[in-house]
Length: 335
Image (cartoon, rainbow, N blue to C red):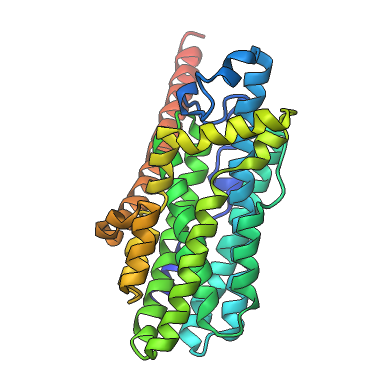
């Protein structure tokens, strides 16, 4: 735990300095994804829309997704502060204090991105709010770990990873990669703290935690449907129903939703919550096969990608400066 605390101190960064905020972002094409990734693409509703309507669909989709990232980070900041207060051992308090700063930085970063680059933001999704409320209202010290570090952070980490890997735009790629570098430590913190503690609990106590996980995972799954973005586009009630039907049937979004459990399921198994009823719930969600994911390998990859983006940026900046110096020398030599 102290080694993780040291890493948390060493890896602090300033979003004002590390992120290249001068990069342009088209608010109507935030991630640079093809329209085939939009749930209603090639449906009668899509064909009824003109290009201005479709541009708004793209903008609201990105705004809704990044807004939920922002609200999740704000909730994580509160949960981390709660962990500092409630966790029984001092080493964990030290690490949780660094995480509280991480979450504040993430919330700052997503808020700035939404305000300056997208221009609109959404309120918190009711399913995410319900899970945050449940997490923060429970008096047991391990529940903020379970609700935040395992469920909310685990799903966010997977969502960030999918978007980081598929976006063609440099600014969102930077933001997602740098945030993920921190989040990998946060999930490791939750695993460490809970793995040993849950070995000591009775069957009845473990069942209570499993109930919480099952309910939380269904809330997270339903959060991903994003009905708010369709309601805010000025669609008729029937068109909203048509849009939600397309969301539920979209093969792209079904794959996306299943990938979002790639960090949660193996983590839940790793900390010792793996009864038959929990496996049955994951089978019902279609994500049971995610239990075989290698969390340590995924998190090493998160670290490496962020470091590689830094190296590529700094190499490009050095080459640009060298070219400027060479041009100046040449100009001076020519008189």
